[in-house]
Image 1: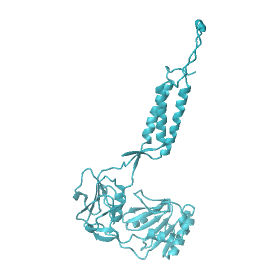
Image 2 (image 1 turned 60 degrees about the horizontal axis):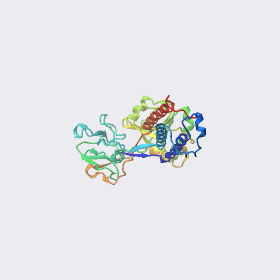
Image 3 (image 1 turned 45 degrees about the horizontal axis):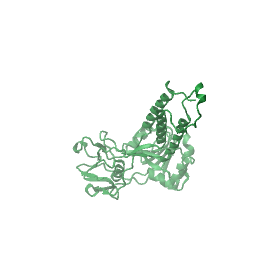
Image 4 (image 1 turned 30 degrees about the vertical axis):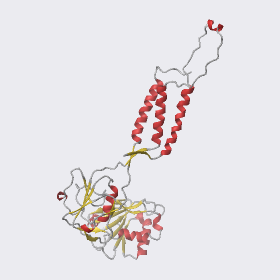
Length: 375
């Protein structure tokens, strides 16, 4: 760990140290002259020159220390490279954790979105192995050993072998990953709208018309057609039980920002040009739910009126492409990936405690009864 200052400009506050120095130079202990008759006959001598003298050095040092601590606090002290160096073992779904030999101190996770603990049930749907290996590499401390346990055949590999910064221990064991569902064609869309979302729904209708999609439109009480593959649900309140079951069986639903859904780990599915998330996704059984994070209003969501909005909507609702199946031994990660992001630990809370203690000491020294009285 390396101490650093995230905002060095805050050290400019050190100039305030001159204030207590000037005050202590100007301050003098009270002196009361006493007349003595015999001194009037003595020859007057030149007064000696006064040299700068600081009274109450302990109090002065405490005040200077307090100002130094405040300046460092403003400069945002932190410790860099505070990542946990605990070994990480990522196990692909379809492998029994009990069959994997690992260090008892290692952190074992599933090779799945969110990297859930191995103590939770294994994901039952196919996962993008290549993307997850890259993500895990960037989220793991540089000093932490990384082990990835995969079955003989991978279902979820992309066109390029992942490049990583760690020296990954690529362990191939017997097992089988969940097969990916086939991509349905064509896309059969259902749109359910309540009165509160009628205005915003016109942007969705315009996008589906531009895509020339066969869309079943109705109110939230209308049943879904038997061959529906995607649903846009623009209604307040919770999803009906029939819609929940339809999603769990493999459906994809895009719901409004005020639709009530169960809490679950999520990941950004669509971001604007500044990187702010517009839609978040979470798994639900064999399907997944996409949730709008903003209202369907061009002011809150300017992308609604952009030319590429229909294509983006189709990309969100389309099922994931069929992953490639590849032998795990031929998909071993390559070196040359980006190093993990540097993490820091904020030290300002500790400095705040020290500053409070220094201030209490300064107040005690400044108000104690035995302190000399200033003129």
